[in-house]
Amino acid sequence: MLKRFALATAAVIAMAGCAGTASVTPSRFAGSFGGQWFNTVDADDRGTSEWFIDGAGNVEGEDFDPRLDIAYRVVGHVDESGHLVSTATPNNGTAAAALNGQLEFNAVGQITGVLTWGVEPPLSYNYILTRHE
Image (cartoon, rainbow, N blue to C red):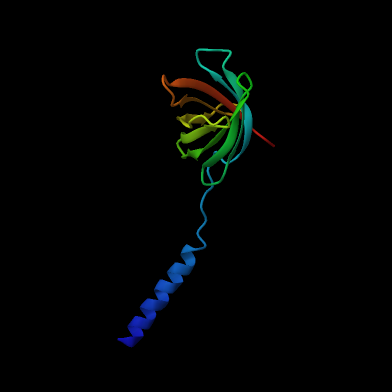
């Protein structure tokens, strides 16, 4: 009985040790990106983006609106299907808003998508982000 317990304990310890060495495939969206965004109905409402997406799909970056001279801190997560859930917080003290939508890679490797900014009424923006080399 004691021998079986010792063998079972050793097996559990061995499996636990192997679990710590398992590799995780990084997000296909991982990298540093820069680009632009523009409102889908108002061509004057546009700006630039600098985003970093880590291997787990966590997004951190900044969107800048030159017309209003406001920087928005973008923090969120993009899953492997490209669904982004994030929050954009302006540096002028006004309330943060959701920035959510679907991202994908285009034929030249840029991340593109239409994201909805959760204000009233909601606004939609096209994003085009190019990977920094």
